[in-house]
Amino acid sequence: MDEKIQTSLKLLQDLKFWIYKLSDYRVDFRNFGILTFEVRGTVINLDNIVRSKKNDYTIEEIAWSLVKEYHL
Image 1 (cartoon, one colour):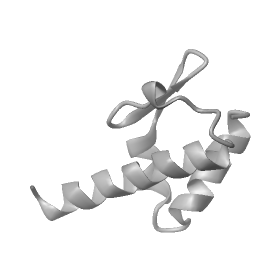
Image 2: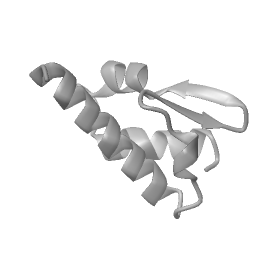
Image 3: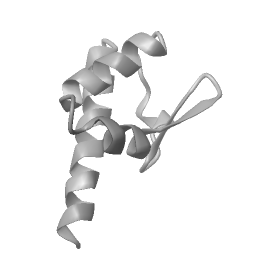
């Protein structure tokens, strides 16, 4: 697998873990797709979020912002 893709998938996996953890385990993993997350009928494109924020924020910070924004 291409190293860039592998890195992106690893970042997405880490982001999903942090969202789960920071939401006090209230998030159901069935809501996660490979590149997306669905919460209360809204599909969030995690891939786009990571690509746009990974240079300025840690994965934990990105996850925390999503947890706060979507009241998870």
